[in-house]
Image (tube, rainbow, N blue to C red; front, side, top):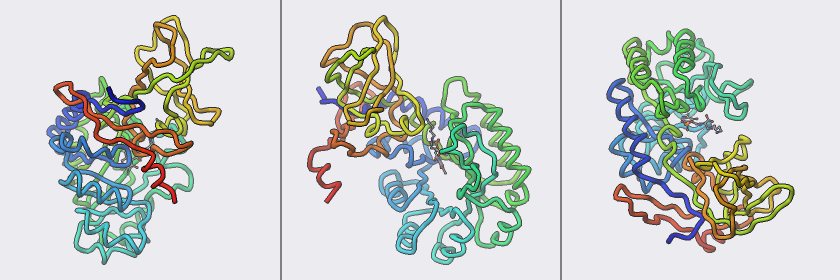
Length: 365
Ligand SMILES: Cc1ncc(COP(=O)(O)O)c(C=O)c1O
Ligand SMILES: NCCCCNCC[C@H](N)C(=O)O
């Protein structure tokens, strides 16, 4: 029995996403790169590698992890590189995408041995969160002025455009892509490859994957480019749970249960975006507010329904716990960091990482 808290990655669920990705790759001709910023738990890369073309990154450490642990095609992107890291980034990457013309001009020569690209910002997005909106006013994420980009076309042969965010709606994707074509068509015609970024939830139930694939194929044919997708969430959605145990129950106008985890430390994105965790089936006569064990007053996973009254020692599984969780976990309050376990295809479960006091101590000095 594994001690809670732990993230449990279920390979049979992960494979469902992988199969959809492989289908889109085959139908559309697009390549799919795992966005490591969302999910970088390399113990399951052996499985993912068979279904995806490689990885994309946000930093030197991510591009190195992608090269060393995933292999295949490795893209480097960062909002800004420093003089002290650019050579090592180039060493690990097949392609490098610069966020700005000034970064391109500064490092084009040092990256001369690999393919170079530029991030474009179409100034429209599907994000309903200001925090995650690449098209927000004064956004630093990519270049938008076609005339300026035309002047550096001799130094690049591709583009990256990331302007979807949790977009489950194919029509919206289609409409945004049409706007990109209208605005940047003259640049796309001169490119060899175009990455359309992440944020497209094409592995979700009922997503029209064939229509999506046909749209990607048409885009690729029209501009004669290799299309890339950078799925983060879409790669790992619904594959993982965070397993926790009830440590205490209280009544304070509502039934409260405190668990051996913390939303701030272990599912931080939910707190940042003011969302609640998910519990399934979330049915029954007993309602509880499930709270984390950190000192933060708002360390609350959400309110859920249960078949029976909760008691100390009961287990709860938070659903959909892979994306932006393990990559963001932290040592706030010294709360024990969840272990990482994998449920294999034969049903057996193995722990691949445990964190101890020594890790906590080493994270500081
Ligand atoms: C450039 C880029 N690619 C891919 C992703 C992955 O997005 P998602 O996890 O929403 O698919 C992001 C998210 O920040 C991104 O900025
Ligand atoms: N579930 C709340 C919204 C999460 C948004 N994801 C943020 C990362 C994303 N890839 C981005 O574009 O910033």
